[in-house]
Image 1 (tube, rainbow, N blue to C red):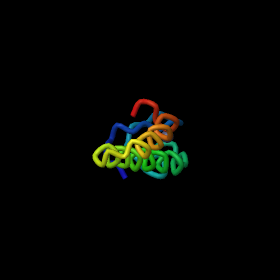
Image 2 (cartoon, helix red, strand yellow; image 1 turned 120 degrees about the vertical axis):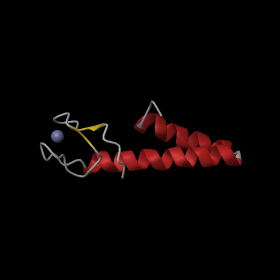
Image 3 (tube, protein in one colour; image 1 turned 135 degrees about the vertical axis):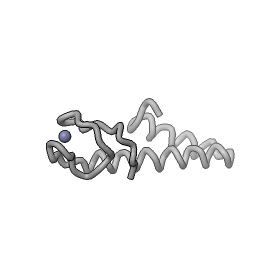
Length: 72
Ligand SMILES: [Zn+2]
């Protein structure tokens, strides 16, 4: 899980590290955490596909990334 304190709760906007529950409003952030983990996994897969020259895999990962995290 990220130790980056720049994560912002989508409910109350409290800045904190990525965690399952917001420290301020106790919102359930487990789905947000899962989405962040999936994005990190996909970014790593994209880098691996690029390094291996696997264009088809790179494109498949790019499609999912564009839906989940368009700016990545
Ligand atoms: Zn919150």
